[in-house]
Image (cartoon, rainbow, N blue to C red):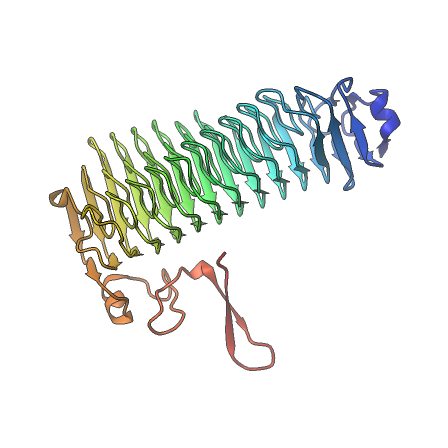
Length: 448
């Protein structure tokens, strides 16, 4: 192992790093404008921060610690009077292929366009157990990956900074997995406000556009205030021949601006694309005009296709032309959308008469199968009813197990029954364990 301390940093001793070598940070260090950056010979280089911190001090346009791929672990980066250069990350600069970050973090704000808390723009790499706490105010920026992340994975990563950048994401910036690439987020979460237009809690806008983007077991808790937002995916996910999927995901933040969705934002699966939400739920207030509990405005619109399976929402609907599952104008302009084995429990306070229990006003072909709405709306959709094909779908003012059993399928497999008279939850929300020494079964609800 090759030690790196403040003296080596000051002398740029290891600006170049040899193949198959392991470098270990031996103390907290400070770097300034004279720091040349680490340049690993190739991706076989390992740099272990050993839990130490590197403080970037007084650098007005920081390009990142690493200029080439390496495995970087247990390293934490702080900012003191510094800011990221456009498209760069606090640990990896832009356009690095094959980098790996394990248990790394950054605390500096992510203010520059396309930038990221760990990886910069155009990176293809893997992040595991990484986090960032800086505000995400750069357009198209991301808490872990900057914009246009290529074949990349984030596992067990999180960010907590308020997201005000347009098209930004809590984990991935915009266009993650786009253009024939694949971006995957697994068990990642975001707790900040989603305040930028078309931004998302996990993925920014256009995730999987012309490529593939998957979110599995991810969640967000922040309010959606920017418009066109999604709790997991921002706007336009899976568009232009691409595909985006959300599985076992949840969102609990209120939606307060137009066209937003609890899981996916505007035009999910639209523009000749495809999107699927499976076993997901949202609980936030639907206070976004044209919004939806699961999907925002224009789901599957313009030659696209949107599928919702085994999902539910429970947020109060306070605005016009919204829906418990889908927002306004589903399947707009030769698109298609379907909802299967899903339910909404949404009390409606809007008085315009344009709110549907499951959908806002419909604009194209929508199929609804084995679904249930519970609440005070009078119809599952208001506007475009003749475009909707329903099979075994019901509406009621109050939840009863008997009524739910008629319309929902897979009780015990697709749905988990907690107690009599309590709305069903998804099986992944409940972990059944033996009660210690009691001979009874107890359960723990995994809900935020």
